[in-house]
Length: 442
Image (cartoon, rainbow, N blue to C red; front, side, top):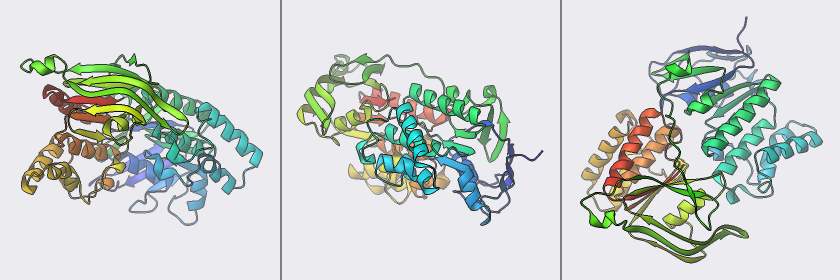
């Protein structure tokens, strides 16, 4: 029997000594997992034809080579991919125009396009966004829109590269489950990258990529997937569409101010809106030093907007926000904040802003990168050449070195493996002991 997708002694770019030989059958639902930086995105990129292998013939799809000029167009019609970063998949700024572009481009019947688009807008709760531009919607809405623009094509192979990572955990699971359910009915092959235990359980087969090797594993044999985390019980706050809950409290017993709950941020009668859309209304809220807060709620409810308001990126329309100290923010997409030419320079940047001499700043950056598991061989690379999980760790390294009093983290664990998760947790808990205020969007 000829396998539908076949890797034969494939070398994964950037993973020395890697040699992958695997087969995937038509209609399989396959989860790809493994440590941060193991090459998961590169592996699925080979199937989609967006990453070129060293040698042609090492990747075959239904007997076709994605990098043969004769087969390339057929493969692109057969296979669709949704990237981790939705901005990479956007063609037009208009949401509706972007969703219908691909099926219109291949001449699909307009009524069929309209019917499919309407179904996906409704299913993914995007009805209010279809007449907007992408710069007017949230990152989670962008991700659902980009997913719709691929699903509408009904291709034979669907690749999801951590494509629901910007959703809240409940929504992410629900979306992936519905996509897989529809794929089974159409006998569509689905290959999805994930680090979440619950999502991986949805797959028929699991491929673990580790140390340059790939093999099928049972879920009990995996070591790198994110642990199930206890959900922080959020409390509704008047004026917000989401919840705020308290996580760990690490107030030092020798610091009387912290024991009393010294204020880090005080918000009084704050109002914020995007045009006619009110996000925050008449909000009174107080955050204390030495306490970790978790912002939870449905995707698109305004959590990221709120974090940017706390950081001073978004400015309140009325009311006041008083910050008792310096703030540092790590946003959802690392690509929005990583701008230096090398990893080490990016991590050093905050220390240099504080006036720390370059040799001392470099030593601090090297220590932080080592402790967060970024290999020395990657320090002189451009940060955006790293995997998404590694980019996130680089961004967090810089934020942790900023010596800020208020730390704002938007989905800091997205794309990380177990090891990365616990390393980030260690630094968060150390900052809490130092009396810093940590606010996390889950």
